[in-house]
Amino acid sequence: MILAPSVLSMHYDDFMNELKQLNENVEWIHFDVMDGHFVPNLTFGPDILKAFRRNTDLFMDVHLMVDDPDFFSDVFAKAGADSIVFHYEAYRDIDKCIALIDKIHGMYLKAGISIKPGTAIEEIIPLLDKIDIFLLMSVEPGFGGQKFMEEAYDRIRFLKKYKEEHGLDYIIEIDGGVNDQNAHDIISSGADALVAGSFVFNGNIKENAARLRRCE
Image (tube, rainbow, N blue to C red):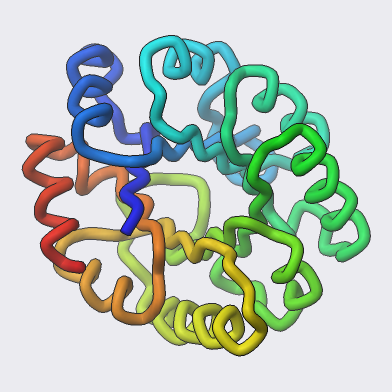
């Protein structure tokens, strides 16, 4: 299992200490980029990602919650991203999504697609054989600390079954409300990667990461 703490919940007044703990206890850093339009929140620019990149070799998983993912894919690729995940809802057009996936792969990065809880997975089936990461939102995107939506379990199981039946290898990543009370069920349903922000950063990072790993 991949742990990908969302640095949206990080305590930036203790940046180096918390980053050291991340370096020792997790595989990925999840970097939420919000433009204040696609979702009602505004977060990080590329300079913050560059600061992480200078101080870690962890996989930098960039989640674009923006109206113009094509523009921001260039910006964050140059800043040091290892993956670019964007929202289907930014386009709702399969051909445009495929073009951006191809562009991201052309920058030698992993490409992913994400959907909000209200979007049917069936809409994006034509993309599943083209992506490296499927980021399933289990809360409405935009803010940390929300409660996990239990409808996500059936969606995870669908993604796992589809992947196995079609011989695909995309990573199923779950984002929203993940904690040690639901992680076992999320993993058992088929998730490969857990994004956890509030849970990981509320207290001791090492201990909280270990609590999630015990749920495998």
